[in-house]
Amino acid sequence: MVDHVDYSQYAKWCFCPWAWFEASVLRRRKCWPKGLRADALAIESLVHAGSENHYANNSQEIPEEVIAKIGPTPEALGLCRRLIYGYVNHFPREQWELIRCERPLRFNLIDGKEGLAKLDLYFYLSKPTVVESGIAGYEITLKPGWWIQEYKTKSAATSTADFMHEWTTKMQADFQMLALQEYISKNTDKSELNHTPYWGQVNGLLVNVIEKPREYVPKRKCPNCKTTWNFSAWQPGEGGKHACPQCGQQKKLDPVESERFQEPSYFRMVVERTPEQLKEAQKDIFKVAQRMKKMEAGCKPSEDYIQLSPGDFEPPNKEHCFDNSRRWGKECDYYQPHTYGFSTIGSEKYEEAEDYLNETIAPA
Image (cartoon, rainbow, N blue to C red):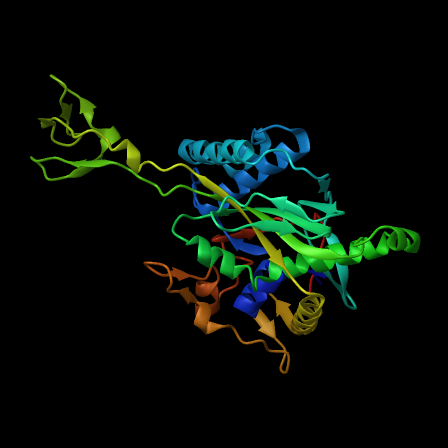
Protein backbone atom coordinates (compact mmCIF):
# COMPACT_ATOMS: atom_id res chain seq x y z
CA MET A 1 0.00 0.00 0.00
CA VAL A 2 1.26 3.51 -0.83
CA ASP A 3 1.96 5.27 2.46
CA HIS A 4 1.79 8.85 1.15
CA VAL A 5 -0.12 11.22 -1.14
CA ASP A 6 1.83 13.84 -3.09
CA TYR A 7 0.65 16.41 -5.61
CA SER A 8 1.41 14.18 -8.59
CA GLN A 9 -0.77 11.41 -7.14
CA TYR A 10 -3.53 13.85 -6.24
CA ALA A 11 -3.58 15.34 -9.75
CA LYS A 12 -3.57 11.88 -11.33
CA TRP A 13 -6.47 10.77 -9.09
CA CYS A 14 -8.54 13.82 -10.08
CA PHE A 15 -7.74 13.02 -13.71
CA CYS A 16 -8.81 9.38 -13.34
CA PRO A 17 -8.65 7.00 -10.32
CA TRP A 18 -7.68 4.09 -12.59
CA ALA A 19 -4.78 6.07 -14.03
CA TRP A 20 -3.68 6.83 -10.45
CA PHE A 21 -3.85 3.13 -9.53
CA GLU A 22 -1.70 2.16 -12.52
CA ALA A 23 0.92 4.86 -11.92
CA SER A 24 1.14 4.90 -8.12
CA VAL A 25 0.13 1.44 -6.90
CA LEU A 26 1.16 -0.82 -9.77
CA ARG A 27 3.93 1.60 -10.76
CA ARG A 28 3.35 1.03 -14.45
CA ARG A 29 4.07 3.62 -17.11
CA LYS A 30 4.08 3.61 -20.89
CA CYS A 31 7.50 2.81 -22.35
CA TRP A 32 9.30 5.79 -23.80
CA PRO A 33 9.82 5.67 -27.57
CA LYS A 34 13.27 4.45 -28.51
CA GLY A 35 15.82 7.10 -29.44
CA LEU A 36 16.88 10.51 -28.20
CA ARG A 37 14.32 12.69 -26.45
CA ALA A 38 13.19 16.28 -27.00
CA ASP A 39 9.79 16.17 -25.26
CA ALA A 40 8.58 18.73 -22.71
CA LEU A 41 9.19 16.41 -19.74
CA ALA A 42 12.81 15.83 -20.80
CA ILE A 43 13.37 19.59 -21.20
CA GLU A 44 11.87 20.35 -17.77
CA SER A 45 13.88 17.58 -16.08
CA LEU A 46 17.17 18.82 -17.57
CA VAL A 47 16.48 22.47 -16.71
CA HIS A 48 15.42 21.46 -13.20
CA ALA A 49 18.65 19.48 -12.70
CA GLY A 50 20.75 22.39 -14.00
CA SER A 51 18.95 24.87 -11.72
CA GLU A 52 19.49 22.60 -8.71
CA ASN A 53 23.19 22.29 -9.58
CA HIS A 54 23.43 26.08 -9.77
CA TYR A 55 22.01 26.57 -6.27
CA ALA A 56 23.83 23.61 -4.73
CA ASN A 57 27.27 23.93 -6.34
CA ASN A 58 27.29 27.36 -8.02
CA SER A 59 27.68 25.60 -11.37
CA GLN A 60 25.65 26.29 -14.50
CA GLU A 61 26.24 22.83 -15.96
CA ILE A 62 23.64 20.08 -16.20
CA PRO A 63 25.08 16.99 -14.41
CA GLU A 64 26.41 14.41 -16.88
CA GLU A 65 24.61 11.55 -15.11
CA VAL A 66 21.26 13.32 -15.68
CA ILE A 67 22.05 13.87 -19.36
CA ALA A 68 22.99 10.20 -19.76
CA LYS A 69 19.80 9.06 -18.02
CA ILE A 70 17.40 11.24 -20.05
CA GLY A 71 19.20 10.98 -23.40
CA PRO A 72 18.26 14.33 -25.01
CA THR A 73 18.83 15.25 -28.65
CA PRO A 74 21.75 17.67 -29.20
CA GLU A 75 19.25 20.42 -30.02
CA ALA A 76 17.24 19.79 -26.82
CA LEU A 77 20.40 19.77 -24.70
CA GLY A 78 21.58 23.01 -26.31
CA LEU A 79 18.21 24.65 -25.59
CA CYS A 80 18.34 23.57 -21.93
CA ARG A 81 21.81 25.03 -21.51
CA ARG A 82 20.63 28.33 -23.03
CA LEU A 83 17.68 28.41 -20.64
CA ILE A 84 19.87 27.81 -17.58
CA TYR A 85 22.64 30.26 -18.54
CA GLY A 86 20.04 32.91 -19.30
CA TYR A 87 18.27 32.38 -15.98
CA VAL A 88 21.51 32.60 -13.96
CA ASN A 89 22.55 35.80 -15.73
CA HIS A 90 19.06 37.34 -15.58
CA PHE A 91 18.51 36.93 -11.85
CA PRO A 92 21.44 37.72 -9.52
CA ARG A 93 22.26 35.73 -6.41
CA GLU A 94 19.43 35.95 -3.89
CA GLN A 95 19.42 38.61 -1.20
CA TRP A 96 18.26 36.04 1.35
CA GLU A 97 19.65 32.76 2.63
CA LEU A 98 18.26 29.81 0.69
CA ILE A 99 17.75 26.55 2.56
CA ARG A 100 17.96 23.42 0.43
CA CYS A 101 15.42 20.73 1.18
CA GLU A 102 17.33 17.45 0.91
CA ARG A 103 14.35 15.15 1.40
CA PRO A 104 10.57 15.19 0.89
CA LEU A 105 8.59 16.70 3.77
CA ARG A 106 5.47 15.00 5.14
CA PHE A 107 2.33 16.27 6.83
CA ASN A 108 -0.46 14.49 8.72
CA LEU A 109 -3.46 13.12 6.79
CA ILE A 110 -4.99 9.74 7.68
CA ASP A 111 -3.82 6.50 9.24
CA GLY A 112 -1.50 4.78 6.77
CA LYS A 113 -1.19 7.76 4.43
CA GLU A 114 0.70 11.01 4.98
CA GLY A 115 0.76 14.07 2.77
CA LEU A 116 4.10 14.60 1.05
CA ALA A 117 5.78 17.36 -0.94
CA LYS A 118 9.19 17.86 -2.50
CA LEU A 119 10.57 21.36 -2.01
CA ASP A 120 13.62 22.60 -3.86
CA LEU A 121 14.44 25.61 -1.69
CA TYR A 122 12.84 27.71 1.01
CA PHE A 123 13.82 30.85 2.92
CA TYR A 124 12.79 33.17 5.75
CA LEU A 125 12.40 36.95 5.61
CA SER A 126 12.29 39.11 8.72
CA LYS A 127 11.02 42.20 6.88
CA PRO A 128 9.14 43.09 3.65
CA THR A 129 11.42 42.56 0.64
CA VAL A 130 11.01 43.86 -2.91
CA VAL A 131 11.78 41.34 -5.68
CA GLU A 132 12.27 41.96 -9.39
CA SER A 133 9.46 40.25 -11.33
CA GLY A 134 10.64 40.59 -14.93
CA ILE A 135 7.11 41.65 -15.98
CA ALA A 136 6.41 45.32 -16.67
CA GLY A 137 3.91 46.71 -14.18
CA TYR A 138 3.97 43.64 -11.94
CA GLU A 139 5.66 44.45 -8.64
CA ILE A 140 6.48 41.85 -6.01
CA THR A 141 6.88 42.59 -2.32
CA LEU A 142 7.40 39.49 -0.21
CA LYS A 143 5.85 39.63 3.26
CA PRO A 144 7.86 38.61 6.33
CA GLY A 145 7.80 34.88 7.05
CA TRP A 146 8.65 31.70 5.18
CA TRP A 147 8.62 31.32 1.39
CA ILE A 148 9.13 28.35 -0.89
CA GLN A 149 11.22 28.94 -4.01
CA GLU A 150 10.15 26.95 -7.06
CA TYR A 151 11.25 27.06 -10.71
CA LYS A 152 9.19 26.04 -13.70
CA THR A 153 9.56 25.98 -17.47
CA LYS A 154 6.80 27.45 -19.63
CA SER A 155 5.89 27.02 -23.27
CA ALA A 156 5.71 30.16 -25.41
CA ALA A 157 2.32 28.89 -26.63
CA THR A 158 0.86 29.41 -23.12
CA SER A 159 0.13 33.05 -22.36
CA THR A 160 1.74 34.53 -19.27
CA ALA A 161 -1.68 35.56 -17.95
CA ASP A 162 -3.05 32.00 -18.30
CA PHE A 163 0.06 30.54 -16.67
CA MET A 164 -0.21 32.87 -13.69
CA HIS A 165 -3.96 32.34 -13.38
CA GLU A 166 -3.52 28.55 -13.29
CA TRP A 167 -1.51 28.85 -10.07
CA THR A 168 -4.38 30.55 -8.24
CA THR A 169 -5.93 27.08 -7.77
CA LYS A 170 -3.00 24.72 -8.48
CA MET A 171 -2.81 22.28 -5.56
CA GLN A 172 0.95 21.91 -5.84
CA ALA A 173 1.26 25.13 -3.84
CA ASP A 174 -1.05 23.78 -1.11
CA PHE A 175 0.91 20.53 -0.79
CA GLN A 176 4.21 22.38 -0.46
CA MET A 177 2.91 24.93 2.01
CA LEU A 178 1.21 22.31 4.20
CA ALA A 179 4.41 20.26 4.28
CA LEU A 180 6.66 23.22 5.17
CA GLN A 181 4.14 24.51 7.72
CA GLU A 182 4.14 21.21 9.61
CA TYR A 183 7.94 20.88 9.35
CA ILE A 184 8.47 24.38 10.78
CA SER A 185 5.99 23.80 13.61
CA LYS A 186 7.53 20.45 14.60
CA ASN A 187 11.10 21.74 14.52
CA THR A 188 10.63 25.06 16.30
CA ASP A 189 10.63 25.50 20.06
CA LYS A 190 8.24 27.94 21.71
CA SER A 191 10.98 30.33 22.76
CA GLU A 192 11.97 30.88 19.15
CA LEU A 193 8.35 31.50 18.19
CA ASN A 194 8.08 34.13 20.92
CA HIS A 195 11.29 35.95 19.99
CA THR A 196 11.21 35.72 16.18
CA PRO A 197 8.22 37.45 14.55
CA TYR A 198 6.52 35.61 11.69
CA TRP A 199 8.60 32.46 12.33
CA GLY A 200 5.55 30.21 12.25
CA GLN A 201 4.07 31.85 9.16
CA VAL A 202 4.34 30.19 5.71
CA ASN A 203 3.22 32.75 3.12
CA GLY A 204 3.46 31.01 -0.22
CA LEU A 205 5.68 30.33 -3.23
CA LEU A 206 8.05 32.49 -5.24
CA VAL A 207 7.92 30.82 -8.65
CA ASN A 208 10.81 31.48 -11.04
CA VAL A 209 9.57 30.89 -14.58
CA ILE A 210 11.80 30.07 -17.55
CA GLU A 211 9.93 30.53 -20.83
CA LYS A 212 11.17 28.49 -23.76
CA PRO A 213 11.50 30.51 -26.98
CA ARG A 214 9.04 29.86 -29.76
CA GLU A 215 10.72 27.52 -32.22
CA TYR A 216 11.57 28.98 -35.62
CA VAL A 217 12.80 26.60 -38.34
CA PRO A 218 13.47 28.46 -41.62
CA LYS A 219 12.33 26.52 -44.70
CA ARG A 220 12.74 26.99 -48.44
CA LYS A 221 10.70 25.50 -51.31
CA CYS A 222 12.33 24.01 -54.42
CA PRO A 223 10.84 25.51 -57.62
CA ASN A 224 11.55 22.29 -59.52
CA CYS A 225 10.24 19.40 -57.36
CA LYS A 226 7.97 21.67 -55.26
CA THR A 227 9.30 20.10 -52.03
CA THR A 228 9.89 22.26 -48.95
CA TRP A 229 13.10 21.62 -46.99
CA ASN A 230 14.67 23.04 -43.86
CA PHE A 231 17.13 25.79 -44.75
CA SER A 232 20.01 23.77 -43.28
CA ALA A 233 19.25 20.79 -45.57
CA TRP A 234 20.10 22.68 -48.78
CA GLN A 235 23.64 21.91 -50.03
CA PRO A 236 26.10 24.67 -51.03
CA GLY A 237 26.33 24.95 -54.82
CA GLU A 238 27.97 27.27 -57.34
CA GLY A 239 27.87 31.05 -57.45
CA GLY A 240 26.29 31.44 -54.03
CA LYS A 241 23.44 29.10 -54.89
CA HIS A 242 22.23 26.05 -52.96
CA ALA A 243 21.13 22.67 -54.27
CA CYS A 244 17.81 21.01 -53.42
CA PRO A 245 18.46 17.85 -51.30
CA GLN A 246 16.00 15.87 -53.46
CA CYS A 247 16.38 16.89 -57.13
CA GLY A 248 19.62 18.88 -57.06
CA GLN A 249 18.05 22.00 -58.62
CA GLN A 250 20.10 25.04 -57.62
CA LYS A 251 18.69 28.39 -56.57
CA LYS A 252 19.63 31.41 -54.51
CA LEU A 253 18.01 31.17 -51.10
CA ASP A 254 16.53 34.19 -49.38
CA PRO A 255 18.57 34.96 -46.26
CA VAL A 256 17.29 33.78 -42.88
CA GLU A 257 15.39 36.42 -40.94
CA SER A 258 17.49 36.53 -37.79
CA GLU A 259 14.95 38.70 -35.98
CA ARG A 260 12.51 35.78 -36.02
CA PHE A 261 14.77 33.79 -33.69
CA GLN A 262 13.61 34.42 -30.14
CA GLU A 263 15.55 34.38 -26.92
CA PRO A 264 14.26 32.73 -23.72
CA SER A 265 12.46 35.03 -21.30
CA TYR A 266 12.33 34.95 -17.52
CA PHE A 267 9.95 36.22 -14.88
CA ARG A 268 8.88 35.63 -11.30
CA MET A 269 5.47 35.38 -9.73
CA VAL A 270 4.05 34.96 -6.25
CA VAL A 271 1.53 32.30 -5.23
CA GLU A 272 -0.10 32.83 -1.83
CA ARG A 273 -2.64 30.99 0.30
CA THR A 274 -4.54 32.14 3.38
CA PRO A 275 -4.75 29.88 6.46
CA GLU A 276 -8.41 29.28 5.61
CA GLN A 277 -7.52 28.16 2.08
CA LEU A 278 -4.88 25.76 3.38
CA LYS A 279 -7.36 24.29 5.86
CA GLU A 280 -9.88 23.64 3.06
CA ALA A 281 -7.16 22.16 0.84
CA GLN A 282 -6.10 19.75 3.60
CA LYS A 283 -9.72 18.60 3.99
CA ASP A 284 -9.89 17.93 0.25
CA ILE A 285 -6.63 15.96 0.26
CA PHE A 286 -7.86 14.06 3.32
CA LYS A 287 -11.00 12.90 1.48
CA VAL A 288 -9.02 11.85 -1.59
CA ALA A 289 -6.58 9.89 0.60
CA GLN A 290 -9.49 7.99 2.15
CA ARG A 291 -10.84 7.05 -1.28
CA MET A 292 -7.37 5.99 -2.43
CA LYS A 293 -6.99 3.73 0.58
CA LYS A 294 -10.40 2.16 -0.05
CA MET A 295 -9.58 1.53 -3.71
CA GLU A 296 -6.25 -0.09 -2.83
CA ALA A 297 -8.01 -2.42 -0.40
CA GLY A 298 -10.59 -3.44 -3.01
CA CYS A 299 -8.25 -4.00 -5.97
CA LYS A 300 -6.55 -7.27 -6.85
CA PRO A 301 -4.18 -6.63 -9.75
CA SER A 302 -3.25 -9.62 -11.88
CA GLU A 303 -1.61 -10.48 -15.19
CA ASP A 304 -5.07 -10.47 -16.76
CA TYR A 305 -6.61 -7.27 -15.45
CA ILE A 306 -7.37 -5.13 -12.39
CA GLN A 307 -10.15 -6.83 -10.42
CA LEU A 308 -12.28 -4.66 -8.17
CA SER A 309 -14.41 -5.80 -5.27
CA PRO A 310 -18.12 -4.82 -5.26
CA GLY A 311 -18.71 -1.60 -3.34
CA ASP A 312 -15.11 -0.40 -3.71
CA PHE A 313 -15.39 0.45 -7.37
CA GLU A 314 -13.97 3.79 -8.56
CA PRO A 315 -15.16 4.19 -12.15
CA PRO A 316 -12.67 5.27 -14.80
CA ASN A 317 -13.04 8.86 -15.94
CA LYS A 318 -13.97 8.35 -19.59
CA GLU A 319 -14.12 12.11 -20.13
CA HIS A 320 -10.32 12.18 -19.83
CA CYS A 321 -9.47 9.26 -22.11
CA PHE A 322 -8.69 11.86 -24.77
CA ASP A 323 -7.35 15.39 -24.34
CA ASN A 324 -8.96 17.31 -27.18
CA SER A 325 -7.28 20.56 -26.22
CA ARG A 326 -4.29 19.36 -28.26
CA ARG A 327 -4.35 19.92 -32.00
CA TRP A 328 -4.60 16.23 -32.87
CA GLY A 329 -5.88 15.02 -29.52
CA LYS A 330 -3.87 12.98 -27.01
CA GLU A 331 -5.02 9.73 -25.47
CA CYS A 332 -4.41 8.78 -21.84
CA ASP A 333 -1.41 6.48 -21.35
CA TYR A 334 -3.76 3.77 -20.05
CA TYR A 335 -6.53 4.20 -22.62
CA GLN A 336 -5.85 0.95 -24.49
CA PRO A 337 -5.58 -1.50 -21.53
CA HIS A 338 -8.63 0.03 -19.84
CA THR A 339 -10.65 -0.04 -23.07
CA TYR A 340 -9.65 -3.43 -24.41
CA GLY A 341 -9.25 -5.29 -21.13
CA PHE A 342 -5.58 -6.23 -20.83
CA SER A 343 -3.20 -5.72 -17.94
CA THR A 344 -0.24 -3.36 -17.99
CA ILE A 345 1.65 -5.81 -15.75
CA GLY A 346 2.32 -8.33 -18.48
CA SER A 347 2.36 -5.92 -21.44
CA GLU A 348 5.58 -5.11 -23.28
CA LYS A 349 4.19 -1.63 -23.98
CA TYR A 350 4.54 -0.75 -20.29
CA GLU A 351 7.45 -0.69 -17.86
CA GLU A 352 8.03 -0.20 -14.15
CA ALA A 353 7.91 3.44 -13.11
CA GLU A 354 10.78 4.82 -11.09
CA ASP A 355 10.09 5.62 -7.45
CA TYR A 356 11.77 8.92 -6.57
CA LEU A 357 11.45 8.14 -2.84
CA ASN A 358 13.34 4.83 -3.24
CA GLU A 359 10.79 3.10 -1.10
CA THR A 360 9.33 -0.38 -1.47
CA ILE A 361 5.56 -0.66 -1.71
CA ALA A 362 3.96 -3.90 -0.60
CA PRO A 363 1.52 -5.52 -3.07
CA ALA A 364 -2.08 -4.33 -2.68
